[in-house]
Amino acid sequence: MNTLSQLHFRLRHQPELDADFQPASLWTQAYYDLASELGERPVEICLLRPDGTGSVHRDVLLPAVEEYAEWNRLHLERTIKFLLWSRGGSRIYLIGASELIPFLSQAYSPSGERAFDYQFVDRLFGDGLTIQEGYIEPVGGPKGEDSSDDSKLKGCRIGFDLGGSDRKCAAVIDGEVVYSEEVPWDPYFEADPSYHYEGIMDSLKLAAVHLPRVDAIGGSAAGVYVDNRVKVASLFRGVPAPVFERRVENMFLEIAREWGDVPFRVVNDGDVSAMAGAMSLGDGGVLGLAMGTSTAVGYVDLDRRINGWLSELAFVPIDYSPDAPADEWSGDQGCAVQYLSQQGVSRLIPKSRLKIDPVMGKPEQLVEVQNAMKAGDERAARIYRTLGSYLGYAIPQFARFYEMRHLQLLGRVLSGEGGCLLMEQAQKVLRDEFPDLAEKVILSTPDEKTKRHGQAIAAASLPEIR
Image: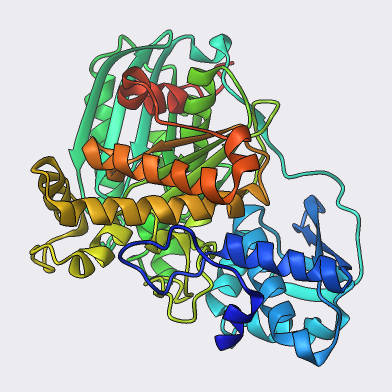
């Protein structure tokens, strides 16, 4: 797409190992500058869920002439993609972009380029995605919940976190962690959900023996969960659809019954990370971003509430290059998971010329890169600086949709000296390219206590003991 360059933007920090990177943030900034020059065309995007809740996003487009049609299609389609995965909804109403509705409807259809997104919406809401002209006022935002306070830490609780390479579990008494354990596992491509069920039960039992009783169980895991039902989750991506519906969707309800129906709550792991961050920072407006097996994101708003959005930002576009790598699951190009996770590290290893066996698992490859960084290998440093540039250019795109005061970073990719280099590079990009935003958003990593136990405490605090 050669027209991208005609928007006249230049990267001050081109990622060292990615000459093709075209950050969505700079492209969008150039698009808005052009719209201001030519005359902005307001557009409203209303996302509704089947229960009538939702949100409205106001944006602008270039004039509706053929000369700018390609740019308008790209801007609006990528914006809708971001809204679907950040806020969530099954019905989209547009005002001000009637000529683009046929294109969008085809793209987000069972046979279109965004068929994965269509199927995700259908599975999550039981309501196929529709895009049409018009406007319907949402009855309110998606149901959120208060961030934790001291009253939610009372009692004997178990907190767990299910990741793609390990599962963590902790025993908590009145907010104090008395036991924690991390167990390796590999759930992504397991077709038999018994593997997942038995692994989760094993971790809960390991924690339970350190408590006089179990008053409540709270957990976090990648994916979307509604009333403890699994709607969409990468942990179960290897389970065939018919088996998923029969044995996975209600798995956590079955686990709760096994534990005597004590108060039980499981939510998206990113939201729990953000909650842990808000608890440690004593502030709201926290976007928690975990660069681990995938890209897990959660958000606590300015009032320190989890707002009920999806915040599955692994699938949002941050690179508009036509040569951007495709996500192995959704098939879409330029999605955050290919840049802000272990997948991003593995993708950059061949470009760095580090000699690491490509047959190794991604967690093992990350360890090799970390060892090379510790040994002072400049090839590893180039990987981390590239990741830092990715992050620095992604933050302004996130800030288009989230009111942020803090970006708290965590995950295995941030471990060690490389993590410090990555953050330094991200801050450099922000200062040089987006100085106003750099003054408003504080980048940080959790303190050691939060790193060790914050997620477990936040997860354990989720259920309300009646």
